[in-house]
Image: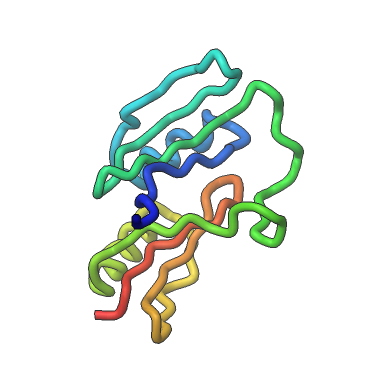
Length: 131
C-alpha cells in the first residue's frame, strides 16, 4: 500500500494582520476558511492546485520573539509544485511585481527552484521537476 499524498500544510505566523494580506496577495485569492477555533488559534486556509490545503495559524499564546529558522529541528521549507521552468519564470515576474524578494531561479539536475520568504521568514519555494 502506497503512503497517501500530502493533504495540508499549516504554518504558525506571528501576526495574522500582516501575514493574512501577504498570503492573499501571493495566492491571489481569499482563504476558503477563516475562523477562530475553540483550540485557541485563528487560521486561514487556502485550497491550492490539486486540492492540497495550505493554512496559516496564529495562536492565542504569543509566538516567541524570533524569526523562523530552517536550522532548527522541524520545518525546513514549504515547496509548491510548478509544471515547468517556464511557470517558474512567470512566478518570478509575479513575485517581482508584489515586491517579494527572492533568490532567482536556481537550476539543478533534479529540478529548478525559486526561493523566497514570508513576513515571518518562513522559507517557501516554487519548484519544477526537470522538463
